[in-house]
Amino acid sequence: MTRKILYVDMDNVLVDFVSAFSRISEPVLQEFEGRRDDIPGIFGLMDPLPDAIDAYHELDSIFDTYILSTSPWENPTALTDKLAWVKQHLGKCARKRLILSHHKNLNRGDFLIDDRPNNGAEQFTGELIRFGSEEFPDWSVVLPYLRARK
Image (cartoon, rainbow, N blue to C red; front, side, top):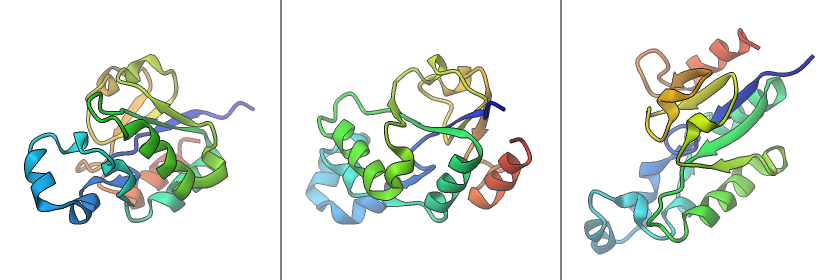
């Protein structure tokens, strides 16, 4: 039996984007106000969201699971920082499962968990699960929903 394909976004789904701010100097935060995802090194400073790591591991046992994220075009370290984060926090189960794209709709699959409809997420041909929304506020709701659809 073929497993269904699941894509999971990083920022604000697996990764707590705001957690990096306390590790960055105030002058740098001010310099990049309104475009903080362009701060060099920021993606290496982020903590996982609560329950995200365990959720990813469980979903990986149920689905053919990939990480589908965007790498800010103006941030020279974003690509390597995101790869390092995946290696550090998800380990071997995520090996060669990181896809960085500004066009998420080009990937085919059954589900995409993303916090925003941007970068092609809204045009994804499978089901878009809006993480952080009223319907899917956190992993305690998303996990049972997906377990029932394996």
